[in-house]
Image 1: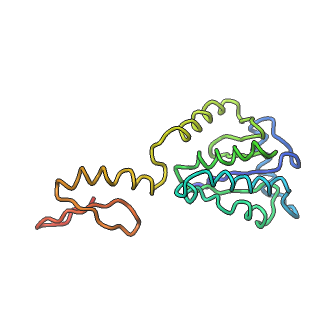
Image 2: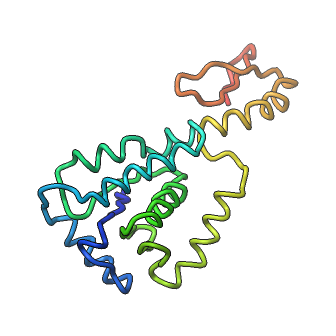
Image 3: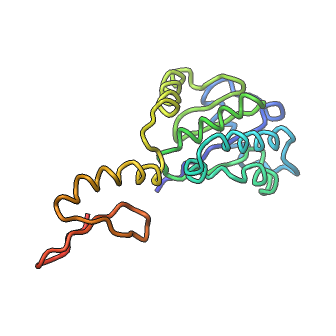
Length: 193
């Protein structure tokens, strides 16, 4: 599995890239550069991320892995570019949206090489060719009411699957992983969906 890393740094202290390639070079250099303490701007950015995170429901909050960002920025061995490793979750665009929204309030740069995008505070997206696609992604995640987290999926699909499968002898059974699971016992075998 590939790592999906996002790098964030204080633009007032370390500079703003003019091009995507500059952001890539700066992220690599600043991720290695040790510093004594994190900047006040980065600490405030972490607090803003946590404030914005609270506007999402609890399922999304737990899936986004951003709780404790402010404390993590303050306590992590200090590098000029703070690193967040994004797990392979389907919500990574929503996570980036929260980071980008927080960046609007602070002078920071957010660089995501995997998604091939950077946000330079307050509203510049690099490369320029990614801006329209980013706007479409944000619109999809903010207007689409389709379930986004596993818990939301279960809540949405379990009644539909129950109505579909019960007439054929299936019954809902507990699953240790919290998944939707149905079972039908026949004289020859048990069928599990």
